[in-house]
Image 1 (spheres, rainbow, N blue to C red):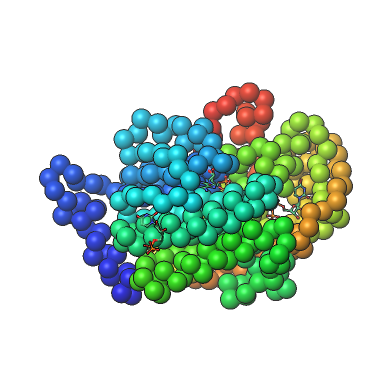
Image 2 (cartoon, helix red, strand yellow; image 1 turned 60 degrees about the horizontal axis):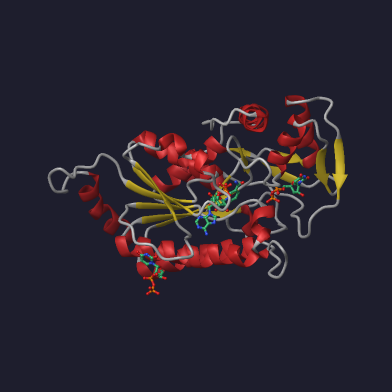
Length: 343
Ligand code: NAD
Ligand code: UDP
Ligand code: UDP
C-alpha cells in the first residue's frame, strides 16, 4: 500500500498536472525492454495507440527492427539498442520488463548469457525502477513450474524444476528474477507486478525460432513435414498474443502484485496441434517424429481463476481462430512480402 501511494503521488506530475509549461504530457512514459521482440512489439503498438510515450530497450538478439519500424517518425516512440545486462539511466513511469530470449533454441544457445539477462538484467531494471519510482512488471513464465506435478498449474504451486539441466538457465533464471522482484517490492517499497506467461503465438514470431507453433506453421507453408518431438502426447496450452497483451496491461494498471498466470486454458497434445495446423494450412502435410529434447515438460495448462477474479481478464481467441491470423503473416514473410502485421 505504501508503495502504491508513493507511486500515485508522483503520477499527476508526469501525467500533466504539475509539469512546467510546455512540457505537458498526455500519457505515461513507458519503457518496454525486449520491445522489438514478438510479444513486446505488440505491446508497444497498444501503448502508443493509447497515447503513451514508449522507449524500447532491446539488444536485437532475437528481436527485429522490422517489428517496430512502423513507429519510426512517431515522436512518442524511441528505440535504444542496449543490453539490459549493462546499467542504463532513464526517466520513466512504468517498466514492462520482457527482455530475454523465449524460445528454447534461443535461450539454450548461450545459457550463461540467458542467466545474466534474467538475473543481472532484471536487477538493473529493478534498480532503475527504484531510482525513479516507476512501476515494474516482470514477464515470468510457466516454466517456473518445471515439469509440473500439479495439473493444471495454480500460482501457489512451487514447481518441479531441474536446477542443473539444459533448460535451467531459463527456468531458474526466471525464478530468480521473480525473487529479485519480490525482494525489491518488500525491501525497497517498489511497485511490482509479476506475470507468468504460458505458450503464446501470433504474427511476428521468429520464423525459425524452434518453437512448436512457429515450426509447424512454417513447415506446413513450405510443404515440409511437421516435426513432432517424442511421442507427441505432451501437452501445451496456446494463447493468442493479443489476449496476452491485454492481460499484461490489465495487470500493470491493476492493484495486484501477482504472480498471475496469463495463458489460454485450452490444452492440446502436439499431435492435436499438428492436426489443427493441417486443417488450417494443408490437410496433406506429413508428420515426422523426432527425438524429444531433455527435460521437456510433459504437460502444461494454466489455472487462470486468479486473473479472472482479480484482473477481470480471460483470453478470448481459441487456437482455431488465432492460428489463421498468424498464418497470413508467416506466408508474407516466407514468400516475400516483408510488411509486419498487427493483430
Ligand atoms: P522474443 O525472443 O521475441 O523477445 C525477446 C526480446 O528481448 C527480443 O527482442 C530480444 O532481442 C530481447 N533481448 C533478449 N536479451 C536481451 C538483452 N540482454 N538485452 C536487451 N534485450 C534483450 O520473445 P517473446 O516471445 O516476445 O518473449 C517476451 C518475454 O515473454 C520474455 O521475457 C519471455 O521469457 C516471456 N515469455 C514468453 C512466452 C511465449 O510463449 N512467447 C512464454 C513465457 C514467457
Ligand atoms: N541501475 C540502473 N539504472 C538506474 C539505477 C540502477 O541500471 O537508473 C542498476 C545499477 O547499476 C545496479 C542495479 O541497477 O547494478 C541495482 O541498483 P540498486 O540501486 O538497487 O542497487 P545498488 O546499486 O545499490 O547495488
Ligand atoms: N515441439 C515439437 N516439434 C517442434 C518443436 C517443439 O513437437 O518442432 C514440442 C516440444 O518438444 C515441446 C512442445 O512442442 O513438448 C513445446 O515446445 P516449445 O519449444 O514451443 O515451447 P516450450 O513450451 O517447451 O517452452
